[in-house]
Length: 93
Image (cartoon, rainbow, N blue to C red; front, side, top):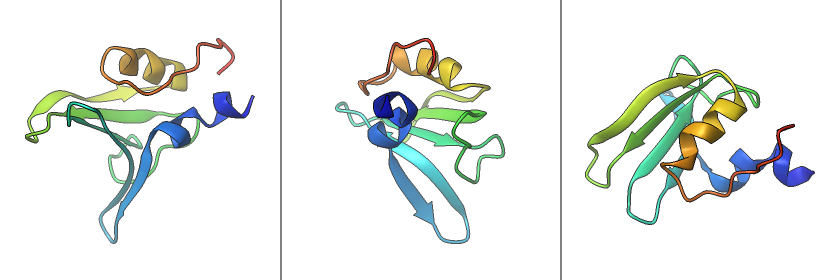
């Protein structure tokens, strides 16, 4: 069950800019970047959300977001069409 409770930590890397922000980031094979923060946009989201999700192209152009996603399930749905990260399909996640 560890995969289901830690899938975000396994698929994303923690990025910290001192004094500015902490976020979960994932670089996709096509070079695009997905950034997850808390609702305020400057810190890590709590494990259950809410999440502020942003998708940027390899050239720093905004592709999608920032979009406020209230739960991990809504984040999983949002990521399915944008990311290659493994997303659990267990409805209890």
